[in-house]
Image (cartoon, rainbow, N blue to C red; front, side, top):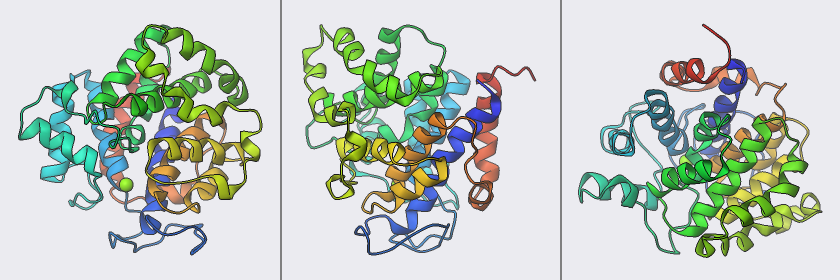
Length: 315
Ligand SMILES: [Mg+2]
């Protein structure tokens, strides 16, 4: 993969997060957003990014270092309790399931892979939102079994219910197909059979596929906006993101479509940014938005070594 492409994928996710922060929790069509603004529930300055990015950056760092799951949980703790990986030295907006997982690790001393909540009520998008770097890391991994195993493990750090794990499988496998030069339509038509086959001995996981099946239905693009939910529920989020990409012709357009759906705007726009930047690999997310990101020095200091390690370009 080209260095520029990797960097653009990560930036697009962060830009989506930052665009969404000032309108997070707002009801659909009570606002229209097409630029970086300040304010919102968290009273942030324009360009401020949230937990989505603050959980993604430790994963970027961990994959660069090839450190283990325990070391990654330590980085999550450093974010949540010590405000590292933040735009202005203050952690904000951490979801309940992620917070519980970090507490399980730092206070209750659970093993990393058992920190995630396994209950059905813990199927928020908190794992999905941070996994883009894993797709980049696994771009050349040809074993589907191996990819699914790592996806499950990295999800389980915070989310252990099979529905959240299935959501991560679908998201990461869509990214994997796109990063290996398949068209989105091709990936969507092939993936259900591939997953069904790969999970034939894991019926508990495969049975969750049905919650996401609309993504793979021909005509999903034409589902009306009124029937697309954009809540923090893993299923709603992934459907909203794929729908936003299917109904756009550029990265920027997809992100704006997503951020204007309301509710969990930062995460939906962030994942849409990632997905669309993998679909439109020749495009760049608006450089004006990238330049407006807060604490870009920190972002680059973490992203650049990862880009260097994972790109084809020799430095
Ligand atoms: Mg957030």
